[in-house]
Image (tube, rainbow, N blue to C red; front, side, top):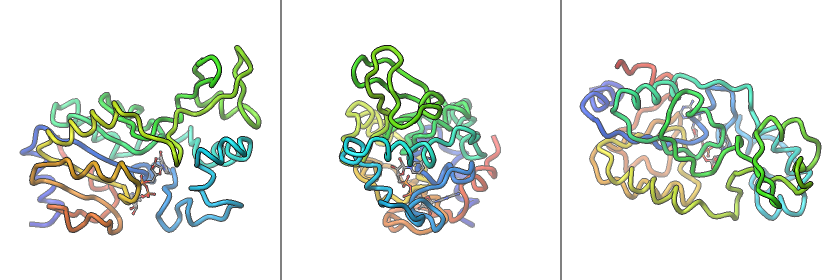
Length: 240
Ligand code: NAD
């Protein structure tokens, strides 16, 4: 059977599907990922992106951090693509139990997914480090240099997990629970190079681990099925 046919067959027979994805899920929405050929790691900056997006850099060069962040991480005009939309449909149909994402763009929720676990936070939540007041992404987009709280003048930080920062315990716990209970785990659009997120795959106990990617990953040998292709196109083939 062709990989895509096997994938569609497993989707049909499964009713406890969990999806685990990364930046590749949103490239078809026009948001660049990190590691593809035209991803952010292959563009020229004064510092590599992993340096700019680190806690140390944020603390020491806050204005420079925000210059990069506004330009490259805030893609507020992006719209959900076929993969985001089909995942939301699968959830409404009762077949998919959770989307676990490394993305910070909020596109799964925009597509209608309700059970979304954001391992690395979201650009849509920003908080004042002094008084805790919350701000939306538009506020950050419109502000200059380091955004300042309207209420108390404190510095605002995005609720995004930077390099050197830990992941939220409860989000990790729930992700582990969903993955360990899944009858089918679909892993798509992630290079599986970022830990501890990539290690979540170890908690899957079933025999339908599907990897969807345009290129290879270090976990390919673990997959029960590899579907090579663009994730939006692959998900478009699902009929509910
Ligand atoms: P990554 O950039 O390391 O890897 C992306 C992977 O997706 C690659 O393996 C690539 O081959 C694949 N890919 C690209 N387009 C695809 C498509 N259309 N269909 C199928 N596969 C496709 O991304 P990552 O693994 O998520 O890890 C990087 C980190 O980058 C994450 O922590 C994430 O928070 C952050 N990030 C998020 C966004 C976003 O929110 N949209 C964008 C860039 C980076």
